[in-house]
Length: 359
Image (tube, rainbow, N blue to C red):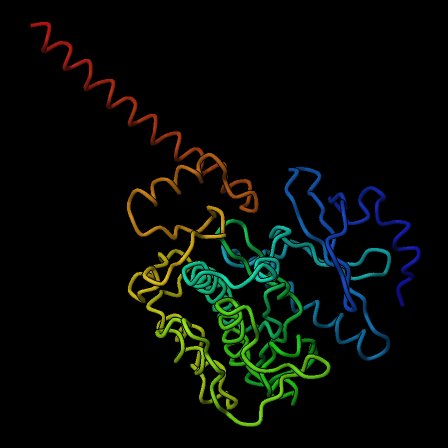
């Protein structure tokens, strides 16, 4: 069992986590402590999650689950917080992750529901991140606003490193630690698969648009549902989304969309990370009442050429700090080369015109 008093004494010592400098605490709870950190060699911001293990069988299950996490370390997706490393420090297991930012969807919803365009821009990105996890045979099982990190209008799903893994069609309930009213009912019965994430996505979409959970929450945060009726949609809930939300929230997993890709398809969106987010087909823009609360972000969500060019210019000025260094340098080099070619071409044309005028 870890000595937490010694852990806190040693936390700030150099290379307590190899290659990292631990900075301020970001948060924590019953299952762990999260700290902001930076990579000493590059200065890249990171987040480190130190896990609080139980005793006996619970501890061994978590340690075994950590071994499965290693195969996610090479997962590079713009809508997932990356997993950089894992190990033990002072007897405490840790995960080193890319820094998704200190702002989450939970912070945004504390100020009220999002405008439909903002909510869907975030929701589509969350779906794409979850779809990438499912493609690796990993189920999140704890999707909630606090695990959606925002940077402008860009969204990344985090805290998936200890999700249950689907192995050969069998489910192992080694990590049954969801947040009650976001959890699919079958998770509480320990008989869940990837469709549990579809249920959680339905809760997340409803809450993003209304500021409230779709069903009453009772003692202990548990949802009280007496039947399979759809939630009560408030006036103004986007009609194209009501059927999809209700489908995601069905009690029987077999009645929900069969995959996150199907959810995206019903939204008219592609599941690939490079696909443009196109919301006009849903008529969402007609429902806007106020301007966006989300700052310009990392997703190309504009629907006009001018908006996309402006966003590309912003990306050049402010490259994504979470992208690998080699990719950031390569991106800058490509843009520099492009502008050099354009500059040379303009100069050449100007010289030719001057020669013609001089004749």
